[in-house]
Length: 116
Image 1: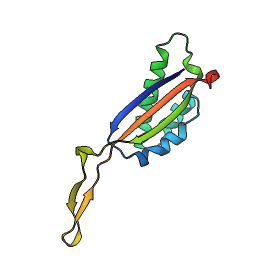
Image 2 (image 1 turned 90 degrees about the vertical axis):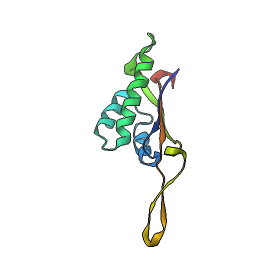
Image 3 (image 1 turned 135 degrees about the vertical axis):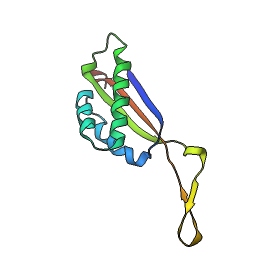
Image 4 (image 1 turned 60 degrees about the vertical axis):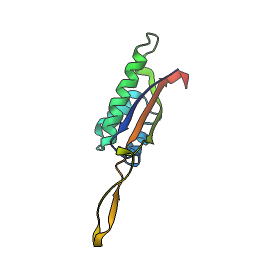
C-alpha cells in the first residue's frame, strides 16, 4: 500500500526542484530525510515537509512500521502561472520582456519495504 502527500501551487519552478526529487527517489525514509536536510535548495525544504506528511499519513495505520518505509515515488510537476498569464517588464530599446512566474506541484508516495 502506498501513502501519499502533496504540496500544490508552490511558488517555484519545477526544473529547480527536480534535483531534490531525483536525490531521494527509491531511498528509505530516514536516509531521505538526512539528505534533504543537507541539500541547499529550496525544493529540498519543501520536499522535507511533504515527506514528513507522507510518513504521518502512513503512521495513521497501526499495522505500518514507519521505520521500514521507502520513498516509492517523488516527482515535481509544473503548475499554472501565477495570475494565469505572463506579465511584462521593460526591456532594452523599448521592448517588453515576459516574466513567467511559475508554480509547481510536489508529490511523494511512500510504501513499505517488503511491499515493493
